[in-house]
Length: 326
Length: 294
Picture 1 (spheres, each protein chain N blue to C red):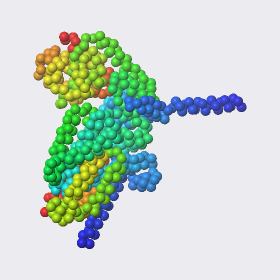
Picture 2 (cartoon, one colour):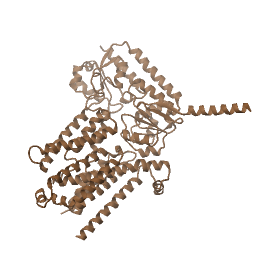
Picture 3 (cartoon, one colour):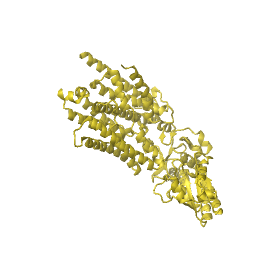
Picture 4 (cartoon, chains in turn orange, cyan):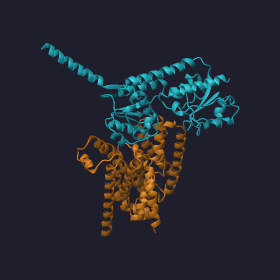
């Protein structure tokens, strides 16, 4: 038992190092070359004004936003997969991103500024959450299957509304709108709201690891073992939705991270939620930070949307792990 | 002694006034006050249209960075690139150390242009919506870049050229026009659009002027029903006029019957730049041809 515990610590420590490394790379690399000495000079509080701007105003906040978004999405994905007991669940499966996109597009169509657009994206995501929650409850009982079906259908509804609005929107607004559907960190604003959600959420889920392990085996067994199943499910749903809403508000609907990172970690580390949840945050954050670094440097000065890179990096590595697994 | 004091006072006054004169301020299309401490010498343009306006305003030599597709004038093709207008490479812009950034108000991501402002860069938001706006943009940009002479001359010849067209076609018989912005989906413009203003200037009447949206999608049926006397199309490129051939499948339309299918190279009519005068002249001549075929 003590052995498993120390192994877990070791893995988390390694992932933490990966996370720090990814942030360091994100700050050090860009379309303008900054030498390590110049980088250290800026971090030490000195350096040239240009490097100061590059690192502290442009790269730093963007790297932090990328990391937080990746962490939020991976954690939300892991929670959704436990809640719905469905490997295909990702943070967007219950329509949270669709609600956010519809609200953001509406605000954009009304000519709102960025703050208002972000605000309405967040509101739309939460509205969609409440809608799905209320509808899934219905007159009968509240089961994960019912929740999943309700969410998928509501998401399809949002999708139709998005298509409708895109069809009606002026051509020159299209690029700004597509961002909400594709996910792109070059539009990300301040990273701190995302961190303010991510850190407390992770701290909240850590002590629940044991109960979640039991819940992952099925609600009946969990109930038999003394887990308060219903409140735990509600908590999972609310938390995952909040995390997703925050992620979508920060960077649009970045795909793939929320689905694949928890699965990759399960393939590598086994299905112990006490390990998987914090590991998801660290690995998801690192993946998105590195992917965004590639997105803004690979073809610089041409900038790519980060979703392309997460998929290009994630698909082959996930397929490899899946192929290798027994 | 008095003389010396007077001289000192005078020199102080002069230097103060020269400082005053050196500060250059204009109002941009977002109604912001944009000031540069001295004539801007390192300008980054964030849209192909802005690049074109700057060159026309006489500030071409001071432009040090542009976005992709900035292809006019030819000298703009060799400028260092700072990403595309929808996704700017902020680092590349900062590294150019510009003293003025000319942004596209509705095209560039607001988050990114704000970030440039937060770096302390003066940002001029450009968004010419009317023919006259092009002339004023030229003057304002010339003021910021210290190229007033060229800028005002270009603005004047643009205004004069447009006014001459207006005077000439003021009393011309109206021609019903369908302007085709895009083929799939079929798109046109409404009365709020700059192109509509050019059509009116030439004595044309845009058949879809009353639609509520700026660049509405319309069906082929709606075009048939409107039965325009002339169809004017842009295109995928500067010489590609194949969009017009498709209309020949409807010989009952007045425009097809009379052979009034016209092509205006899109960069002269769809970009808010002084080249609009060339596009306007072409369009006016075409509509005049259409009048002759009645």
